[in-house]
Length: 111
Length: 231
Image (cartoon, rainbow over all chains, first blue to last red; front, side):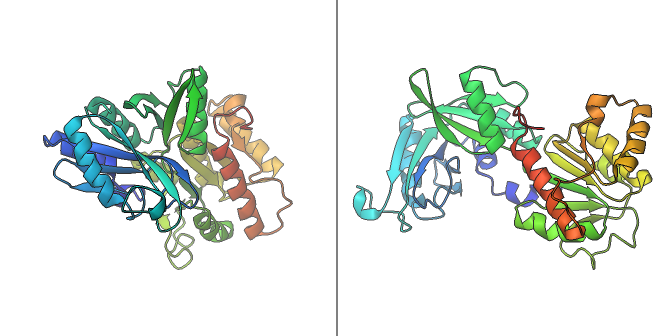
């Protein structure tokens, strides 16, 4: 009743299942490790469809764009991949976590 | 992740059943463990801990790094009685991250004026709970002092195996309650699941302090559920 109704419509795992049921290919990004002041805890999900729709969050907005781009590649290759994001100048990524934290994100396709 | 596994996970979440997924970095999510069916091996123990804490973590098992993600249903905190203690408890529980809902058929008590922004049911517990049943992720505190109101809720909580069941009243009051529940067919083990007198023993001397004692006892029961030190 009061618990899930509003959260559910923005739930990445529900969105992923809906997209799959609609015949779209989907990837799931999951925070698997955090250091420092990471914005979202380990276990947080971002679901991404092959056409670039996404639901959920792995960083509160800092790196979602990069994760979505990688996820579309993961959908094409059907191979899981681990991404690492940190302070911008410490990584090869052009996006970073301004909070100074670091996160590792597992991106996997749905089979 | 296999899509049938995703479906099973979403079903577990929709039915408020705890679940843990097991993933490797090379292959993604490989396994879904559902509460009540978790094995006793090293993986099962790690999964049990993940469910208790609600935290995702990596564990090393047989030389392999596994990522365990825990899906814990949100706690439902039902308080029977729109009384003075409840007025103190509602904002405290919210500050600690638990939204409570109040059931009290006495319309003069269960008013939005007394409980702003709290889910209120000015109905009998058995009517509310028939529409929205209790479950293992529900805590129930019965604090009306009136057996006509408290007893049906306590019986529903015992039947649903709520992780926390507390009942207000002196030892003498509780003694009479035990007699009634025994007559209703509950054994000592079941009745022993009721924390009474309610609340951690902190010498609480007023309604707000009793609210602290109840909230702390409920949190302890939640965080230690399924572990040997549970009670």
